[in-house]
Length: 300
Image (cartoon, rainbow, N blue to C red; front, side):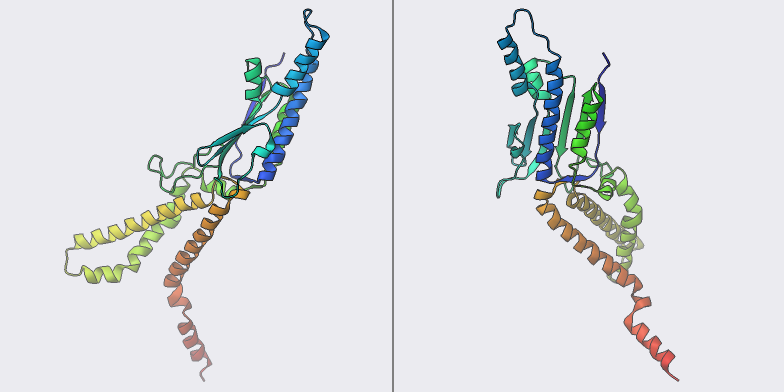
């Protein structure tokens, strides 16, 4: 007999809707029942069993063993366990969903005592990263455990489970996957962070030189260092806020909170970018300068 093949799938940044997930659960349950019928058809009645007992064994397998079980955990610490797809829902003014786990493992192992040969486990991690996490390096990839693991000897089982999950993904977010990757902070530190620090030092140079004119050069240097470090700290907060506002995995039905912060994020980026652009480009694109140039050229 061939050994079971195992496959573990990472999806990157994706989004679902509650309707997608409920439909996915229904299809996964159908695939598990189909596999159950294949295995039930291979059963052989023992000599000591009557026909009625053998039929009852098959009925118990269909009802208790070959099905899925989902665990939906909420942000307030509560959780529900059910094989009914309708369990995936949000109560009005209720807590958001934190994670979803669905598998055919628990029903099979609870009733049979061993793990099934044909097994799948899907975990959807909807947790958002902390705005400032002191326990993780800022350049570390975002911790998200969303994955699908499949095991089995039958190719149709493996392909069916994977397709049932993939086709219910509402949207993929390649840019978010990149932002949540490792060392992205370091890349944007060179592109955004350090130029922001230099801009901050240039912007306050007149005020700083005036206020510290009578002090030693060491004090002036320390002032510039402080301003530069403050600008780098602001970049770090903005970077972490970006990962918070654009989560790795989300359900569109409960994206109200991140979507509000995405508007704030865009407002901050436009405001900061516009301010820097205007300060740098104003001497060259000033309306007054263009008007004076136009008059000069128009004069006889």
